[in-house]
View 1 (spheres, protein in one colour):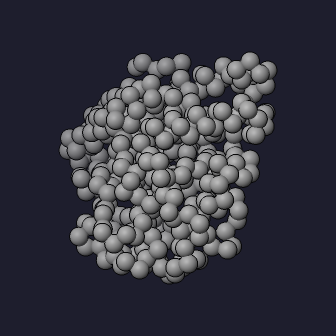
View 2 (cartoon, helix red, strand yellow):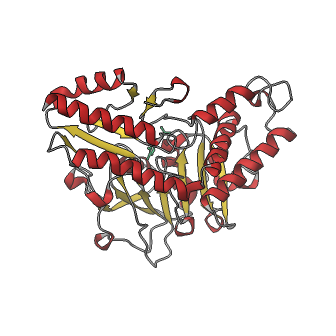
View 3 (spheres, rainbow, N blue to C red):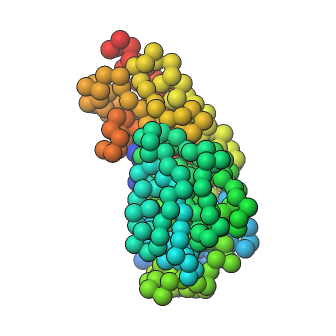
Length: 366
Ligand SMILES: *Cc1c(COP(=O)(O)O)cnc(C)c1O
């Protein structure tokens, strides 16, 4: 087992693993950021040094995601759940209807929050089969009167991911919660009106939320929108209307550099697909010892949810995993079982170690 710096293999769903190289650099710069004699989190966000850093972080993020110039990028606070409110507040634009697709716990949360602000129509749902698939787009019932159409493109808890982007020709902007798979593979930003993501799954520490929003959707926030969560105002002020979470922005920036050095989202997507395939194959070839219930085409590349045939062995599985240096594998309480979150920073070596452990555990109990 080849473990960098004696770091434990971390399969936590979030906050989640960060690249070891990123943490080492942050550690090296912690007391003295680039000869200033102070740390990055101790200086003004309006000073020359942080302003330059912020511009570079945004630039790298734009480059990695190939974000077209007619989109604003905002680095805000409030988390994914905060966005469940800020999306309707900013994007209803005087309308009273929004459409949501319900594919799991996070879509459900987004719907619940949105109903405070407008009439919500759930135009498709996979609740009938315990959120184990993405409903076929041909069965969705969209209306051109909706202010926006919301999807969660990777359901972190249920382990379901969209591998194609639903498209309708009705001009209704598509909004996506990409919290748990942003930057995991190439995504065509131009197909969306707005994308948001909390950083703590696949990018950096908690406390930072990214919003990518098409410029033509700005300018009509609900009058009650708090200024710091008003996309229009934040865009006008280069997301510095208030103090941004400076250390989180800095760490996200280090992760962006790390991604660029490792071939960007294209390369990352290939590695992530291979990692996921290895675990799903282990599950599928276990003669039913392990089980994954998600439709094969919709299986998440980031969050692999699985169950033991005999669930009374869950505790033994987790304890044995921990002894083998594998942590964070307990399933979310909403679905139970086990879950391996294999974000960008989870190395192929970590996945290899997990798969070896899974096979050994199955062999021992067979
Ligand atoms: C984690 C998560 C959230 C919630 O994020 P918070 O930052 O805790 O509010 C929302 N959506 C998805 C898809 C998530 O994975």
